[in-house]
Image 1 (tube, rainbow, N blue to C red):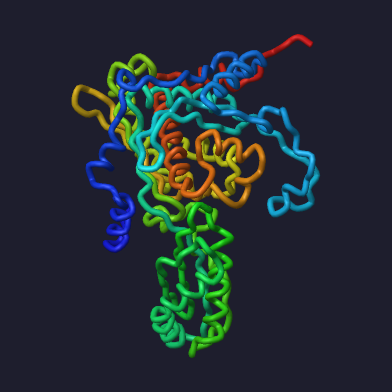
Image 2 (image 1 turned 180 degrees about the horizontal axis):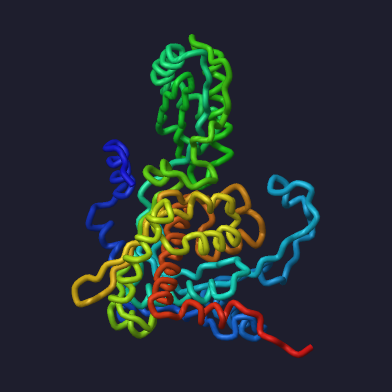
Length: 429
C-alpha cells in the first residue's frame, strides 16, 4: 500500500504533531496486565439470558458506561429524529447489540482499555471477537496507528477527441489552488488535498482527494466537488461535451485495487505479539499450526482473486458500523486488507493487520441517533477529534476477530463454535 514521498512526510508530521519521537513510542508501548490490571471482562456465559444481560449492564455502569436508549429504558417517540437518515419511515429493524472487552489498545489516538459494541444477528461472532480481545489484552495490548486519511470524489469529463481532453487536463492541473479555495466555500471541515488525474482517449477523470475532519465525508466531498465542477464548466477554455459528478473511479462503496494501493477513508495498521503459552492455552493450538493455516489461506486468497488476504474483516466492521451509525454499505470497501502472521523469537506469535479503506466518522450520518450515539460514547468517541480514535478501535477489534478465527480454524474448533453459539436451542413452549 504505497504512498508518495509528500504524503509520507505529511503522515510523519501528523503522527508527531507537537510530540517527540520518544513520546510517540511511549504511547505505543505494550502494557502488561501485571503492571496495569485489566477492568472486568465481559463473559460469554449465557449471552442471551436476562439475568446475565443485567449483570453485563451493571458491570459497564461500574466503568461509567451508562445507557438510556440501548437498554430500552427510553423509547424514541418522535420520528422526526430520523430526518436526513431515512425516507418513507415506517418503523425500526431491531438488531441485537453485544459488547466485547476489555480490549487493550496502545494507539496514537486510542490508548486504554475499551468495551466495544457489536450489532449483529450472527451467532458466535461476538463470542469469537471477545476471545480475541482477551488474548490481545493479556498480551499487553495491540499497537495501532492511524496513518493517514483521504476521501475522494471522481468526476469524469467527455471531449470530442484526445487533443481536447489533453488540453483540458493541462489547464485543470494548473487550477488546483482555485479548486482548493472553492472547496473551502462549501465546508468548514473539508480540505482538498490532491487530485489524481487519468487520461483515457477522450475521457478525463479527476479524482479529488479531501480530508474531512471527524466526518466520513461522503456528502461533504460530493458538494465540494460539485461546486468545483461548476467552476470548471464555466471557466475552462476547452468545454467538455458532457460531464458526470462521479465517474465510478473514486472507489465509493466497492472494493477496488486503487483504494487498496493508496487510501480511501482512513489507513490504519495494528500489531500484537501473542506469547506462545497464551496461544496454546486460549486458542488451543500452536503458533506453528496457525502459521501453516496462514500460509494456506494466503495461497487460497490469491487463487480466488481476493484483493488483499484476510479472514473476516467484514464481520466486525459490519457489526460496529451498525451499532455506531456508520454507512454500512462502506463495508464493501473497508473490509479489504492484509492479515499477516509470523513466528518470532521464543516461539511467540506475531499478528498484524492493515486496513487502507476504513470509511468511518464520529459526526454526521447516523452517529447522532440515540442508540448509535450511546455506542460511540461507550468508547469515548463523541466530540471533536475522535474519528481517528474510533478508526484505531475498529482496527484493533478487527485484529481480535482475525486472531480468534484463525485460531479456531487451526485448532479444528470452527464448526464446533458455530454449533454452540450459532444455533437456536430447542425449548419447550
